[in-house]
Image 1 (tube, helix red, strand yellow):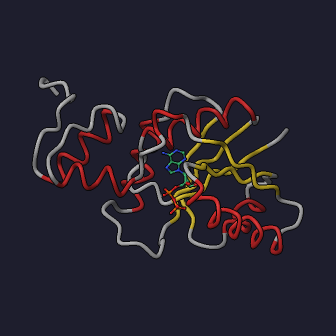
Image 2 (cartoon, helix red, strand yellow):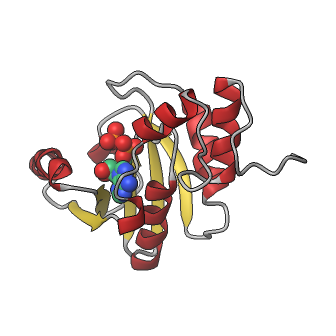
Image 3 (spheres, helix red, strand yellow):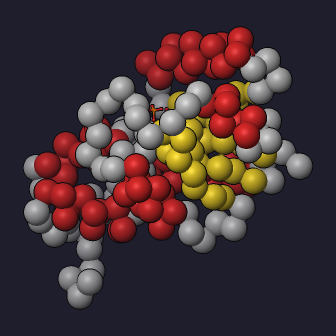
Length: 168
Ligand code: ADP
């Protein structure tokens, strides 16, 4: 049984993340989407909110669960008895950081492999930062995030994003 951990800030989870998680779930027996509690980034959503949104976005995939963590990713990987860290790659600019991260994790835990999945072209432009910027300016989020995330962003920024069913 091969178990993978897909770690990140997921602030919030968007369609690029969802795509990587779903594709990883086809490759591995179980995938833990691991929400990092305290990244060195300014967060819009609390850890509980980020976990709940990821759970809602991926609830239809039986072999994905969502956890949060606050220590080293490799420590979580060991706790969950996983073998693989999954990361997503959008552009060359992601590569340098992901390589550094993968080599650090290899140094800390040589038995853990990092597997990078290439973004799907339709999500190559997406990042949580972009999504938050669009939401801040009350833009249409319908092609960028799951509906539950659009709703949560709308609540944070005080508007009803396009693409949300008006009856909800
Ligand atoms: P982190 O703070 O660890 O970078 P993120 O939530 O920003 O966390 O991203 C988690 C992972 O998802 C990273 O490996 C990132 O490169 C990947 N990722 C982010 N956006 C996309 C996207 N549009 N397509 C594919 N992978 C992505």
